[in-house]
Length: 452
Image 1 (cartoon, rainbow, N blue to C red):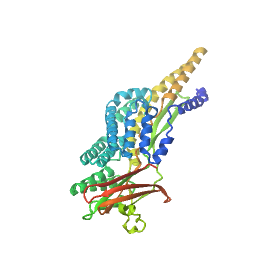
Image 2: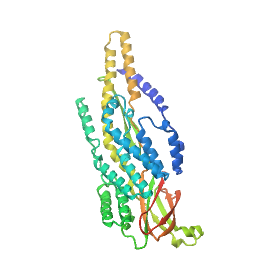
Image 3: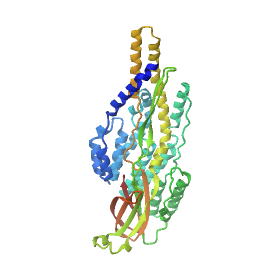
Image 4: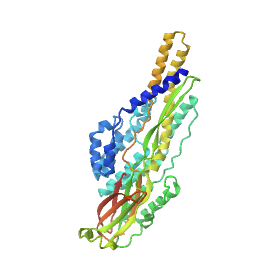
């Protein structure tokens, strides 16, 4: 088996070179446009290049990506249609994923229809709730928040049975069973925040107070996910002075984690086996934004050119993190990653059995010609393993990393909001302006996005 160590690195290198040039889409122009906030332009590009970006198994990702981009672009009705399509496909593909798993054992997980990660499935409902808020449909916004809650309640058990079945099969092959990771996420501060301000806007303060308590609990009971202080502005949300309007600002920044392939190779002269195991790891993308400041100036002063002369009329607040979508993406992926790893082991055992058999036959053959043939078949089996054993690194590209909130009490009227994003050194990263008409009743919600 010493010969294996001579040709294996060469074969591996050749395959990596060939694979690295296949099916790659250059997202450079898209990423530049995202950083510039050109969300509608990105939507057009993704739509036009959909066949280059997505395979026939990626319908969930395509609808999800387009729905997120439509939301950022302010096309809320279109976003709801696209996100609804993504949600329906997630349900459909998850229901048939058991039968598809058979083919994934033989090749890899990329040959099955992508049915979404838990964080993708639940956060599409948050975006749909925001879409309905912007469309003035508060009842449907509440429905989407409830759907988010219902999905979260059952999410921790989504992969448990499949992990148990895979463990049982691996154990029969002599592998040690793997423990089912615990999912820590069970209560969303962002969902509670949206529900709270919706109830407050309708004058249902008792229900708003219940959400306030759930929000407090989200921070207290999930310190690894909420590893930052609860926003101080939340304590003011239910104490709006008479005659004033409460303006709530939600900001989404950065990009949610991406998946990267991790490869383990095991080979030995003893027993003549060669394993390749490929599985995805969720990697944080990060953001350059460290702080956000919001200033509100009466629109009349801006139009009259008086804003600089009357700084006392400017109201300024700092935004604070409310929910790390990145933390939650990593946490909710752990169970799925365990299942993927167990599947990869099962596949590797099957693929290794083929190459090992040919290798043994090559060594034991008394006929040199047959020995060469068996060696060629062994090489072909290993090459096939290298070519087909790939990690499924599909994941939504445009969900944000972090949700921020703040609020301010303003007299009713028209205002211009200046939203300034800063990096860790305090330098301005981006500046955005929003116009808002503040009312003393109802919901005054402003949503901004900066994916830098």
